[in-house]
Amino acid sequence: MADVVFTNVRILDGTGQNPYSGSVLVRGNRIRQVGRSTAPISPGGAQIIDGAGATLMPGMCEAHTHFSWNDAATLAAIQTMPLEEHVLWCAKVAKRYLQAGFTSCVGAACAKPRLDVVIRNAINAGQIPGPRYLAASQEITVLGALGDETLPHLPFPEFSFGVNISGADEMRKAVRLFLKYGVDSIKLNLSGDNFTPQSPAETTWMLDEEVAAAMREVKIRGKRGVAHARSSESVKQALRHGIDLIYHASFVDDEALDMLEAAKDHVFVAPGIAILYAMLYEAGPWGITHAMAVDMGYQTEWEAACVSLSKMHKRGIRVLPGGDYGFAFTPHCQNARDLEFFVKYLGFTPMEAIRSTTLYGGQIMMKPDELGVIKDGYLADLLLVDGDPLANLSILRDPRRILAVMKDGEFAKAPEIASQRQWERAA
Image (tube, one colour):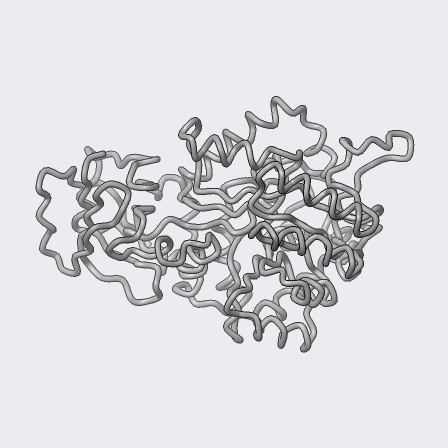
């Protein structure tokens, strides 16, 4: 692995401090030197990448990833993809995420029991390209709730999007099976979701004893519990039982906010607000008009989520981008759109939005002293971007503006050396 020096770059280091001109030396899989001046670092035989003023920033983290969501419009269409094709789909999507600048991803559930584990292991073994990945279980749910896709005339468990349990003993068995498979996290569907009208978002479905049984097994093995929790009660239930990664959190009362703030040193929230917006305004081609989405409860949830998440941000609770990309109306690799939504609707500054996917990304990946920041000694997960993301966050979802992607000191997307001087660098 040859040394690489990025020169003549504008360094956006992920910490929240203002960008500065400089150079970065990568040796092996680590950042070995960050220079804070226009004077280049001595190359010493390294490959030189002249950034021509482009922005060098840490790789992004998607905090709520579903590689196995296949850009379909329904849960059933995701689940019924045959296993062999599903594995190939996940491998293809993992590569796309990496080349889009997401060098780390947190799995939030998979559509079949071992999909996430197999893809994570293949990435780690170098068999396929992909981000650093934390593998999740399928969604664990209760009969009739979000994820239960079984039909009365076809009551086969493998036809269900989630694993259906009833009672603490069945929960314990399901969790132990996923832990045996080697997942990094167990996903529990604590609340409903407006996507399934029979179990709307403000309802809470799991019993405390079921959640407690799951989390006992998770903690024994040093793994992570994560929760689909849109209702206020489900957020509080997650916190009571030691779940430290909460997805959605659209409805939170003052008690829930106080509990989140008290736990802010170890809790993360990844809301996935893009799907709420998409269901309201962009799902028409798939048969969901704006009026239908309002009737389903999405307008109420969108308004509540904007208020709730803005309050969380003001209280210093770590809110990260990502979630539910992989549906027809939220296709994969537009994930950086969340950063724009954070600014437009949740009161983030562009710098805070960048920090949420870089600095906080390293923290949610459980590598707070190795990932998410451009700093001496940190892992070399880097993006070279044509333009200034602080002036225009949308460039982070434009493949043409992602000039280079480096993961672990190696290029996943190499820069086009010959054309460096023609980069537009437009805001």
